[in-house]
Image 1 (cartoon, one colour):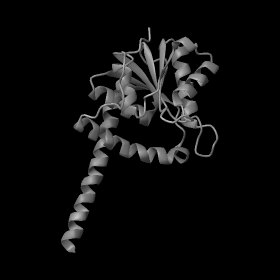
Image 2 (image 1 turned 120 degrees about the vertical axis):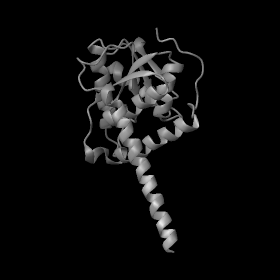
Image 3 (image 1 turned 180 degrees about the vertical axis):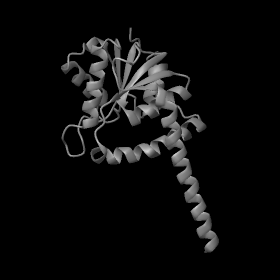
Image 4 (image 1 turned 180 degrees about the horizontal axis):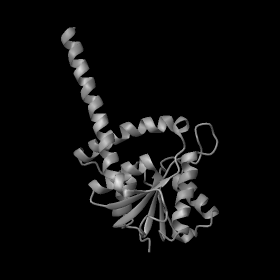
Length: 210
């Protein structure tokens, strides 16, 4: 029994160490590639807005979603991007993140013709790789909250893609607790995906964003 408990303890230490390593290394890598100020971030042809549900768990507006829309509008109005790729999940008939983001951006005055929908952004990994491989962007600005941008920019860098992150307003610890917990494990999955050579669920024909 003692030997079993010792092995179990060592295994727990290894798992904990891996989680800490993944989280710390991703944050460190992305530190110099993230921006909070729209005045300081460099111009890029396109913004990649990472999807989430427009509705929160309680049925009300999702603060993560609203902040990302606001950040994207800020970038466009400051002439930091000319094209916008909205990437998210559309695997169910009654759930369409890209279309919801498109409608919200148009309501905020963004021209519909500069918005391009990526319906196969099932994961952050897929969204980042598809922005490069399908939408043919050699570099771009990722729009999401800081913790999410860190992971997206890290993925981009490890896939040989230049990406910066524009940080949308955070929502506070209490509101986003479960999301922050999931993020810890999502960062571990990034390393596993890179080690195993994981590819997006779908690629498909190139999309001309002009």
